[in-house]
Image (cartoon, rainbow, N blue to C red; front, side):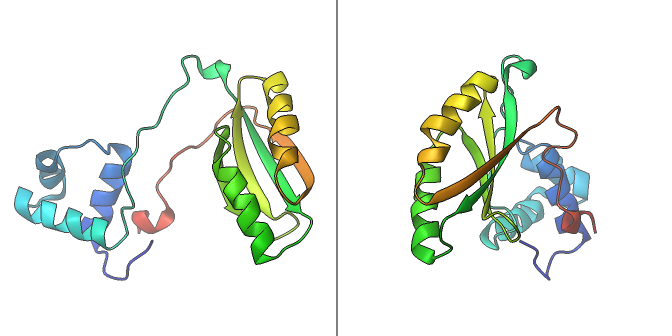
Length: 158
């Protein structure tokens, strides 16, 4: 969420936290040139204003080659609010789906799935994705390798 009230210090705080969400308030304050209390006030305002939606851990598979990332385009039979709601409820119940976006264009949804290998993805496709309500078409593409992941959005870099 971009807020018109973000200044250079706010954006720097966001960049630093994006790189290290566990950074202490004291270290963050020093890095941006604020007192710890002023930094904490700004941080709370960024959280309350929605610029920071939460904190999370980025998990690595025990062996980076042990996970296969599949980008899946899904088209529904109908593009109604009820169809979208039913599909989205089913997506939330599928633990292999890491991300799901409602899209414009040729497909209705873009989904990122993580599987152990091609055979595991075949199982996910057969037992999960193809059984979701309203699905009429599934197109899958296997990622070769990750090039960029978790980069800060451009508005943080302004």
